[in-house]
Picture 1 (cartoon, rainbow, N blue to C red):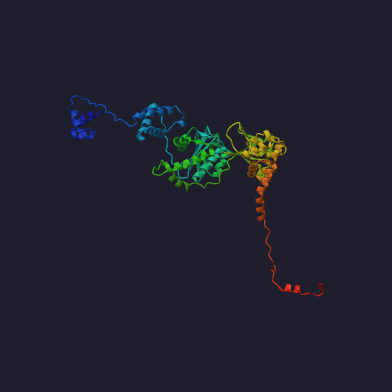
Picture 2 (spheres, rainbow, N blue to C red):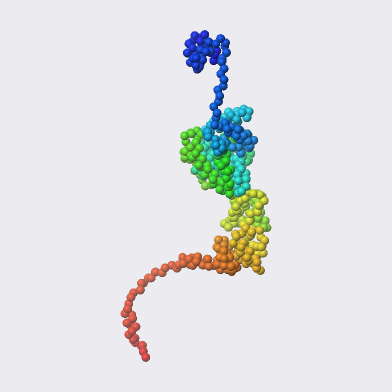
Length: 510
């Protein structure tokens, strides 16, 4: 209904004054008088007011280019509007972020068809009640190569405190380690954990909420005493808090991590841990904007269950040692002590290492820890595993693949000794001394022998003996005999000397 029609009814039918009618309609009294004096029932039209130039106008074309390019990328690789705003500032944009966000919103609405929107019920969690867990896939440069990483997201449902940890896979040992790290950072364990139906936790999805839980996963929940809860199929919104965390962290922490180069996974996870703690103190809580996540977490920490010792979350499987003292695990080969050749051993896989249990598990020396590799087709040697074999096969030193990984001083000594006949046996004697004196002492002795220019097994062993001599003298001094206590203390009696001077009966002096 037009404003002119309302004005005419108020004045001509309801007999209101022009002042009162214009006040009710929110128009000027002069405008109302002009409209009433017109003979035709036509509401006048006014030309559009010229828009004021915006500071964003010179950058709108660049923003549209960025938004169009992002629309063709994978979701995990898209940049957020915040990153675009910072890029515009670097190009000289002098304005605030409001026009940038508004332009991006209008552009996205114009490019996409309006989908059918679903309605959801807002969720509320008590302090210490629950946490949510999820995985995401990220790509970073680790060890000089761009690698795919599986990121574990653990987030408290009440305080919104979160923890990120990166791995090379989503195996059981990674899942258990992520929980141990998160609970340590949170300072406790919530009473309930919310998951999707990931294969490491659910063996079979039944009707409704019926689940066949993985035995190893259930052992972890029993260790930490929290109750697992699984979402319905394809219902990620049931753990929407952690789902949103995946998107939010890609626009912040992961974008900053992608700009760096990481030497290994340990340094990356150490940086992620500190970045999460810093974010707690910077991000406001969504329900209480005047408080940060760290403020609410301090309150929730008092409601968490105590955090026990970390769950020993290894995955164990049997392996057969080959004749070359190697075991196969996930497309890689690892060396073990040569005494275990042709024996069956147990391999316990952790996120960063493999613990191999020898044939006699009761002996402590039957446990060997090996650094784990997630590459494929690699053979990882530890040359010390083959030293005892050199007593019978010293010739293996010349072309033995494991001995190419020896420390540099030992390789220099080997190159010097192999120039002479019988040098392999001499080098074998030096390596056998490691089992008695330790690798560090042997390396010092080898360095001294090489500096003297008289490198030989006897010289190295002589230097080792001289290096060990102060320790042996010190150990001998410490092992002193028990002190003796005199029962009758001696007394001074000079009269005894007088009796010696007097001749006794029967003495004859000639």
